[in-house]
Image (cartoon, rainbow, N blue to C red):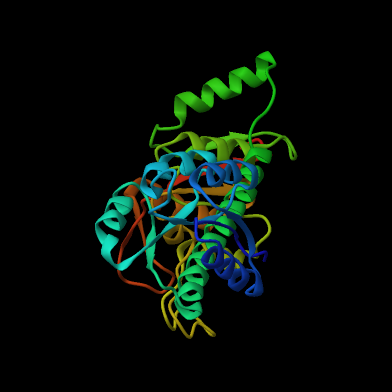
Length: 288
């Protein structure tokens, strides 16, 4: 991953260029400015990730230009450069949004230790932002689109039932978007920050489906070496979609009915009741 872009603002030519040389050799892109005014201009031009700014400069104090640097490059991390007798100004800079300071004279080791650590934080934040955008884009793909009368009617029903805490049945032909509707109900509800899980009841063998839904206790059957949570537990306070509920065997439907009525269930082979906190949505293409 590409390292951060850094802007060094300092009126001491040799010191400024020495810092820039160290940073460039360490793999960073580095711009320099000899005064506050030029520093603000370069912050606008290059949108650096990190700014190293001297506090005491002839034209303006580094603490005075902090707000302008933050406006020029939103989210920038600013480190103040200060002499030993200027710690009070460094503390002022902290209150104005600087993330750290370096005392002059600065060794190569001190500089790179702070910059490398800050660069790691920036790269991590950028990766988190990238992943959030991917997730958001995928969620957008799964949302309802269209403004036809029938689609507006569906959207209105979703708004009306989103926070109604009762089981929901969605019916429709295969491929008509039943899971999309279930996800939209979840997204519009107060449970939206909790998990949304879906299980296709018709795709799992009958003898395994009960264990997948309710979980099982240790030793419940051959091969059950450890206790295991089922979908009802994993859904927590969120939403569980039972897709193709019409394919669920009748014997299991009766256990599901009891769980919905009593708001509790037992793992296969278990003796301790477990609370059912998730909202259950079922879907089917059959005429039940």
